[in-house]
Each structure stands twice: as structure tokens, then as C-alpha cells.
Length: 297
Image (cartoon, rainbow, N blue to C red; front, side, top):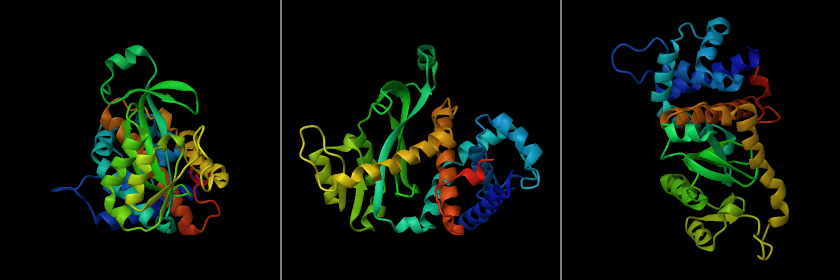
């Protein structure tokens, strides 16, 4: 483990411990605290371990100095699933504790989260009914699984995120996300939301304007060029690079989840790792805030 990763985990441990104010358990606290659990989950995502069993073997050998007690795989899996609300909370807390939180320019996109490749897997999976078939236009392929919707700043700091069935329309999911976080939207003025053509709809744009959000997107075929479109191509690369970080460095598509809870916690684990890296880079004044290279080995 590099000293950079150790520094990140130490800073994250202090941040989580300060936010949650100690343990959330009644009675005798567990030997692995919630703060240590989240740091362990972030380290697993950054170091690229898909298997929890292999990760715990590695951690027992290389991270015993930072984590004096490590549970067995069933205990780690159970604790991690129960900590999903805490992971969601800390993603938001890290964003709020960075300079990026005050950025009124947001980027939104969705990316596939495949959950199965073969027909027998689809038929017997516990995800049946939630995961469905969808189409990925950027890769010209169909997939069976979910879609991750991410609203982030141009630097890649997550503001809002959601997992939804691949069959549900993108505008419908984004509208629900903005409704859930209505207080967050109301607290800001002049939000510029940058998207791709998939969110194009005049009624939807009027709905966004009613919430104080201006949508900036490319023009569709047979549509007049929209205001600000020439600069849009460069900005659109930012969200693609965020997706590349999640898929290339954090192995989003190799999450290994087989249940609703399993997929949700593994996706949240990767988003928390990306948010923690951006938060710490901003804290130390790193030149590239979303780079995870210093922490992935």
C-alpha cells in the first residue's frame, strides 16, 4: 500500500468519525467500527479487488497495521450491506466539504451497469424484475442490468446518483432524482445542467425551468442549432471521463452483485471511492482533482 493511500484513508477515517459522532450501534460496539468499515470499503474499490474473500486475505496481510481487526467474509458482507445509508450520506458529506459543492454547473448522464450476460443467468437471477434489457447507444449493444444515473460537477464530484431499471426513460429518472433532492435544487440559483440528446424534450425542459434549471444539450436531427452548442462537445467529454473513471479504474461493470442489495452497495462503494479521491485531492491542492492514480496501488 502506498503512503498516498494511507494518507487518504487516515483523512477519510477522521472525516467519517467526525460526521457520524461515534458508533451507530446499541450495546457492545463491533470490533470493526463504522469509520474503519467505510475506509476498508474505499480501499477495496481503489485497489481493484472484486472478490471480498481475496480482498480480506490481502488486507489481513498488508493492512493489519491500519485495521487491527478484520471480520470474515460473511461478516464483512453483512456489515457492508447494512451500511448502505451511511455510504450514501458520506458521499454527500464529502461533496459538501469540497470547493466543488458550490459549482452551479452540473453534468448528468447515465451509464449501463450489466448484471448478467447469458439467458440462463437472466432467468434465475435474484435481480429479475428490477434489472431489465436496455440498449447502450455509445457502444451499440444491448445489455441486461441497470443504469447508473450520475449528476456531478465538471470536476467529477458526485452531487446526486441513482440506480434504475434499464427500461425506464432517462427523463423520468432524472425528474425523480430532482424531486427527491428538491431542497438541494431550491437552495441554488441559476443551475446549468449539461446533458446529451437522451434528455431532449420541450415539456421536460419547461419543467426544469420551473425549478430554476437551464438545460444545455446538443441539438437533435432536423433541429436548429441550440445556444452554446459549439462549446458543448468539449464539456461533454467531462462526463465521459467520469464514466471512464468508474468503469476503467474502479471496475464498475465487474461489481459482482447478484441481489438488489449487493449491486447497490457495490455501486455506492465505487462512487464513494471516487468522491473520496476528489475530496482528498481538493484538500491537499492536487493539480488533477479526480485522478486516483496515487491511490490505486
